[in-house]
Image (cartoon, rainbow, N blue to C red; front, side, top):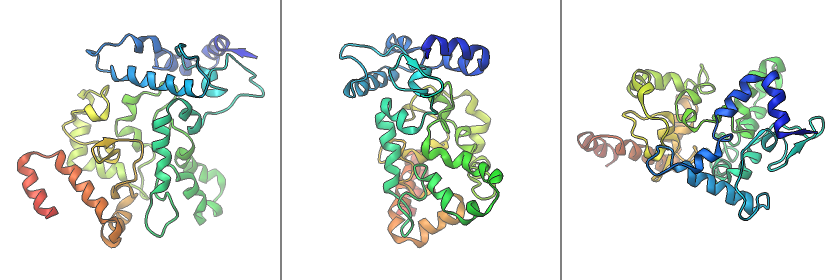
Length: 295
């Protein structure tokens, strides 16, 4: 049986990069979050921590007046709140459902993608929440050597885990707000999304100036001078969430985009919502031209 301290001690020798990333993370420094004041850029995290603690209390995994000390190795690779772990029998790789025990709202938003989709397609297509199922359904996956399809699996398994966007073991929200978090999967000839963005004026501005932008703020408070992937795909009716498929622009590649925006009448309203989002980012002069398009 390994204790929390033993996990850290052993992996400091075996995998020091993992431990170094974790030690700098919010998970390892919850007391710092509690000391934040309204003047701090990341003050919003204090309310999120309280929400996480309330989630755990509702499940009986945290005492009524008890504070969460840390989110350590055992919480994610064993059981939330456990003090010891049988490395040979209880060790697991965390999935999105386990993350959802603490991050309940974010998990529910992510799972809600399964309720949406392209008309006449299976529910949840295209979406992150059904990405692995979609991967298995295609003839190519069944026919091709599995040493090759592992490349497909590495991206499509986002259905089952959160660290596709929130890279372990730092899990920085500031990292997941940047287009690079998306480009790992959204690239290449079959879904050249990052290439489209990079070559657009929005992407040009980001790649030239983005290094100087403040990524510590949540998306709703961000003041980027050009939109990112997250600015558009995570936005819906005035709010940002982990459901990214309620607008037509989720489709991979320009073919699906045209199908969803032009050929499928029931999805036309989604296109208008995407245009209205564009209006909110434009100057008054530009809005005159854009509103003429909508009318």
